[in-house]
Image (tube, rainbow, N blue to C red; front, side, top):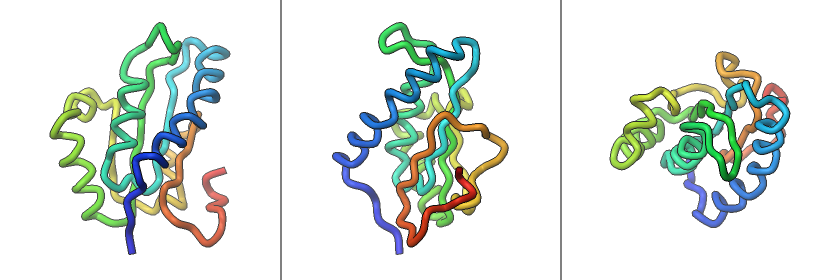
Length: 131
């Protein structure tokens, strides 16, 4: 059973993850950021993260980076892709954002190490492979 997070929850995630992303950018100014969104659902949060790291920014100072969205449900990945293409297709075309079908509990080693991992999917236990 799948659910989509409410927008206010996405706002909390962004508020919580911005400080560590800023820290990573401050300490490693030449290294791209890497963000994993497990349970990418509608694609909204993947797009917002993508806009945050699509290019180096002056304020707030964030390094350029890449966002990986992963979901175990193929229909949600397809919905994510379609939603992103509506207004943010340039993020997919520039390879700033990538969405894929996969077991997010196992992570996505190809994009590691990550500066931030958001798990929007429900879990009975903490997915230790993401640590």
